[in-house]
Each structure stands twice: as C-alpha cells, then as structure tokens.
Image 1 (cartoon, rainbow, N blue to C red):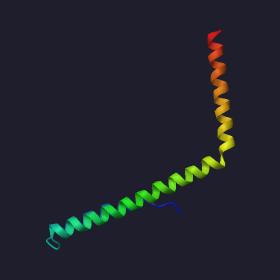
Image 2: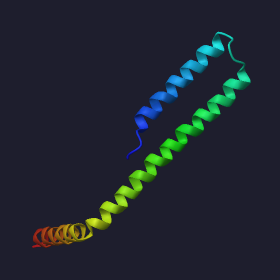
Image 3: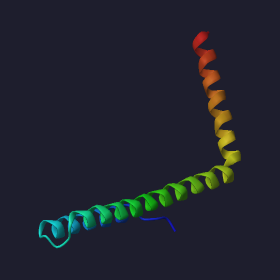
Image 4: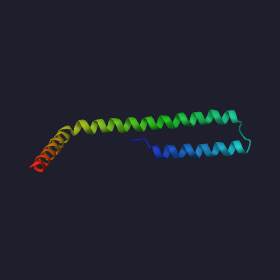
Length: 90
C-alpha cells in the first residue's frame, strides 16, 4: 500500500501546532519541545523515505514490465526524428 505522504505531513503540522500551543501556555519546557520536534521530523522523514522507495520500486517494476513497449516507442521516435531530419534537408 502506498504511504499517504499528504496525511503524514498534515499530521506533522497539526502536532507542531499543538506543541507550540502547549509551549505558549507554559505546559511544556523548551527542551521537551526541541526533543519532540526532532521526533516528529524523524517520523516525517521516515514516511517520505517510504513514499520515495515505494515510488522507486513501482517505477522499476513498471519499466521492467513495459520494456518492449518502451523500446518500440524509442525506435519509433528515433525513426520519426530521422525522417523529419532528412525531409528538412532535402
């Protein structure tokens, strides 16, 4: 299943807002805010890596399963380019 990066980012910002509110109200000290922000950043970075790896593996799978189609399209594009090049010279 694809990681929901938008939801993770939204939760990250909501948690930051809660931390800021708690700090502004004097409920938690600055050192704890720093620690919790670092934890939140680490969790978001982990979600980003998961999303990137999922995208990368999905792309690799798609490229390997569509290899013949991509090669055919490349040959067709090259032939079209060469045809247009030779017709513009003449």
